Amino acid sequence: MKALTSSLVFVMAFCSTVAASQAPFGVGATTIVPKVFIIDAFTPEEAVWHGIPEFNLLEQNITVPGFSPLFPQAHCTSDGSVCQAVTGESEINAASTITALVLSPAFDLKRTYFLIAGIAGINPKQGTLGSVGFARYAVQVALQREIDAREMPANFSSGYFAQGTTFPGIYPQDIYGTEVFELNDDLRQLAIALARKGTLADDKRAQQYRVNFAKDSEYAAGAAPPSVIACDTATSDVYWSGKMLGEAFESATTMLTNGTGAYCTSQQEDNAILEALVRGARAALVDFARVISMRTGSNFDRQYPGQTAGEALHSNSPGFEISLKNIAAAGVPIVTGIVSEWHTRFEAGIKASNYIGDILGSLGGKPDFGPGSIFTDAD
Image (cartoon, rainbow, N blue to C red; front, side, top):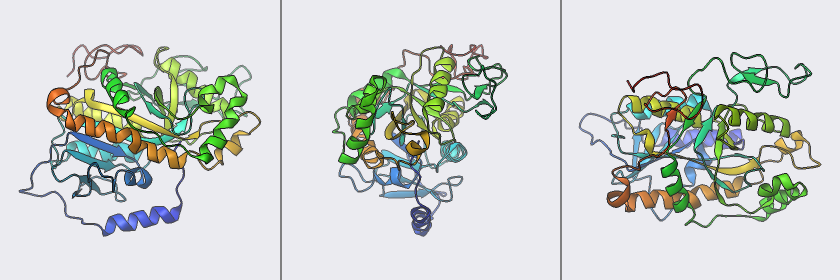
């Protein structure tokens, strides 16, 4: 999962943000109609988009009530075509900020594309340090019951088991509604094609670390150079490490998507962001078919052969630098592609050939995972 930042950097970022212009959106202001809204979680992710030649996100800085006090402003280009919000890390921060964004009178988001663009842990069965993963499914893997592994029954494969059940591997009997989200796969494939126009970064530190995974053929993807891949993402506030937890969440992802999803990246915000956007879509304030989840590999979610889970956790994110660089390397072609082809391809939207929405069927249609929609029609 995302690398831990030092308290000094955190405080400096806070002070810098507070010192910036605090003028809120007010009466008489022009509503901004973005083509793309970039969503980041913390300062290093935010910074990769600043000072680039393709567009300047700091030409407009709008204070939005309800945003994190650490990141109180949305940033936009002068024409408002591209904007950025920084949620703060973890599910509560993410949900709160995106809810405030969706409800803000400063923006008209009905045709906006949302690019979730952050770093993540990565499963070496699926990808490697610096890889860029685009998710169809986002799974809230820690929304389960848990018994400490030291006290779990001998016949349990994991201390995690689904809500309303008494044994691992059984589908949840109590559904909260945020367990799984499915995104527009047609848009995802377009985003992948655009991302592959970029040149991904790599460095010696990441190369030296990832070679350790070549010792196990199961981790061939982890030993390979970074690439752009289609795989799914797992959301949890818990920053976990280790093969056993990784495999438990692989199983949870497979189960919760009825065998369709493949857990690849781990992060702390996506399901929270997506729940806020689903609720916005139900209010006709956003289009959920215009959401992209992009995560870059900063660290492996488990140890390599001969290493302990604790050693892996304290490896200090050997892919941190390239994961940040690859947010921009893959993300800039997506943003500029949407803007440049707005009238010819993106303005009308990309029609989804798959189900999109949550596990409840809140936006209509029939989920291809879970127990089925609880709605007869979107309401």
